[in-house]
Image (cartoon, rainbow, N blue to C red; front, side, top):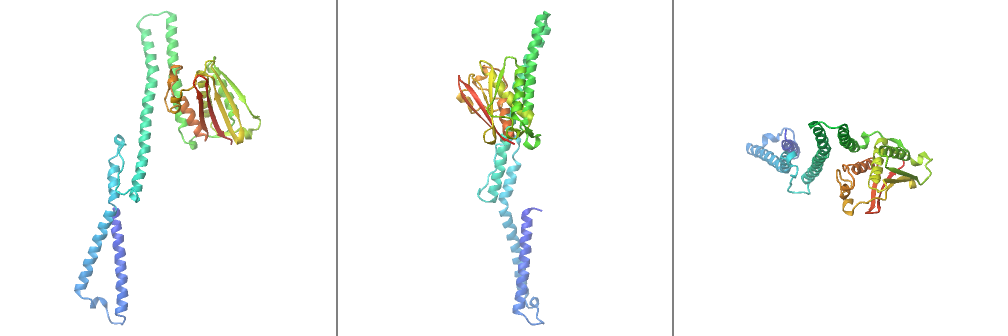
Length: 343
């Protein structure tokens, strides 16, 4: 049963009850003595008028309900015409200030979020396809060329080395994408516990220097880290280590001496971690785009990468209720500062 029919029936029921009450009151007032019946006194003409007026009231109630709900029907029709291929359409309303206007505004806000999500997904898939296609094409080309003619052991060794380098690029990109997906979860979906960021930093620095023998990480503890209550935060150890490794590798990668300096301090019940280098710095025009997925600025010619490392760092830090900021001067170096609340 449609809403307008329900409203009409409710309106009709109320009308019948009111008319019945009026009838009883008039009968008691006009004919209080026994033996009199108002229905017998009223003539057929009055009863006909009453029946006609009752029907008129029914029709008036129906059309009033229909008119009142017409904007809702209009919104329903418009929403039904919106699909994944035309998410740019929006719901229109005659009066944006009434309840139907608020309903239309709510739908439009939802469509804005859906459109942004769809666009982000399309961009993400496009970027992932591009990033994977390059090393895969190089890998296939290397292996196909090695099959066309006989080669020496040294040539085959070179082919294997190149293929291994491309495979490592693919593996690193895949790992980064999986970590990015994990960092996009809600905090309730990730196992959180009390962890010590100073210990995770030590583990991360060892990981970086083991993976790249030419990289160096200098850790500096500005405060006494013996009080576990003061330095512990609530977080996921794997994700935090991933963020720290990315920042350390970035500092080393864009520094001429391949060194990252990490400072950790604990003022005001907070944990401050600074990752600094004396490298090439970040151009001002790239600062606003720095944390966008797959974005690579002018520094992309200095060192290879996929453009998801800093995006991953930002999402992990926000997932832990922290903040990340960056200060950089071209030719002098860059400092990333992470701030977390103590547990």
